[in-house]
Amino acid sequence: MENNSKSKNRREFIQSGVRLSLALALGGVGGLALSKVIEDDWVWQIDPFECTQCGRCATDCVMSPSAVKCVHAYDLCGYCDLCGGYLKPDANALSTAAENQLCPTAAIERKFIEEPYFEYHIIEDLCIGCAKCVKGCTSFGNGSLHLQIIHDICLNCNECSIARVCPSDAIKRVPASEAYKVKGDFTNNPES
Amino acid sequence: MKNKGIIIFLLIMAAVIIAVIVGDYVSDRPNRSKPNPFAYDVKEFKTVDPELIHYKESKNFRIGFEKPVAIAIHDDKIYVAGDNNLKCIDLSGALLHDFTLPGKPQTVEVFNQNIYIAINNQILVYDNGGNLLNEWEPMGENSLITAIAATENDVFVADAGKRKVVRYSSDGEFLTEFDGKAEEGVLHGFIIPSPCFDLDINDVNELWVVNPGLHALENYTFDGNLRAHWKNTGMRPEGFSGCCNPSHFTFLDDGRFVTSEKGLVRIKTYKRSGEFEGVVAAPTKFTDEGRAPDVAADSQNNIYALDFDKKLIRVFEPKNNTRLQPGD
Image (cartoon, rainbow over all chains, first blue to last red; front, top):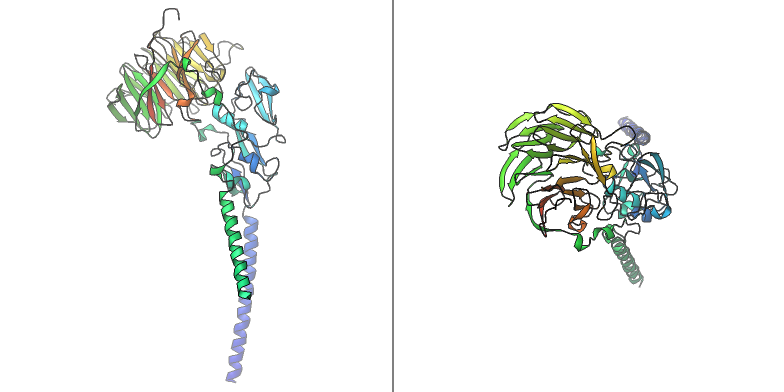
């Protein structure tokens, strides 16, 4: 009689243990699934305030042409006639002539707005992310042209091959909800 | 025999792993990067014909500011603002006064016994002992004061945020403001793509204002009517490049202009007429991609450049101290 009770207790104990383990496993899987649904994905992002326009975005991305493109903060732009991002330093005229354009792929379009203002538009398909225009705009303008990773092109590699060689550690993983850090308010960098 | 084979295999594996790690380490790391095939090259403009350089650097003063902001010279005393302080030093670099300000200064101007300092877009007036004499009404929400110029009865304030010059009486009473538009469709007003907007008053009481988007210096009456202007666009030594140059300027005591530029950081002098005269400091004198130094001049035509990157006042003296001849 006593033996029967002991073996029953053991059986109950094992049954309860199995039930508990199953409940914990189910809870764990459910929690994991829920966290995957709630949690943001992570993507690569360039901090334009850290970027030093080294040219590696054009040469080291696994995509060809690079998934890094120049983007333009129109609200920051001075709409200058003499645009350091559009014209070569030794341009012989402030014109759209090919020999005066700084961009190696002619990916910037210059459009007259009204005297003396010009608007500059990036043709994304042509841009290779070389940052030549960004360098010109940052040095001689107010930095309205800057680089950013375009996420419908980026493969979101586990280890970004540009981040690996970026000399200023300007490329970081960020939540997908904050994918694009763009300029547009020069109070972020009033000394530029 | 079997064990020996395993040992040889493990040794080969270890060698391969070490080779991969070393290969990865010495590969294309940032500090071993290849030259940038897309480099933005302005080297040819950094070198200036020595014949054009009319000044030499004679000394410099370490000012002890983490963030120097502005420099002004009055009665051969140097006033330099930075951090939360204003320092007054003599021309040999000896500290005369150092007083604490209630906030971070934006710019400084000195006229007679009054020191005008902009803090949080408000002008505060101090005496030489650091006593607060007057506190003007703060400027509007979108204002950004970048320069002040004072005369006997008037004080002009450059507001880069609103792209206007504001005229006050010396007591701080608002008198008028203007945005550089001479008349509809003729002049486009001040074009200020970045906070580089300077103004100053010369030896004959003329108000000159930079229009950086047009690479122009414009002379206005105190009521805001355009009287004269000159401009010079280009990367060559005689021109101004980029969106916002000259970033700073001052006058020598004979009315010549001293300009300071960003991008291609350099300091130059122009005759009263606006004709290019020569170079004070070539781009090679400054940090690559550094900021345009603020400039001031003493009565001997020495030029004092506040180098924001090196946190120094750098003094440039004329190689031949020639004064302008009448008619220049």
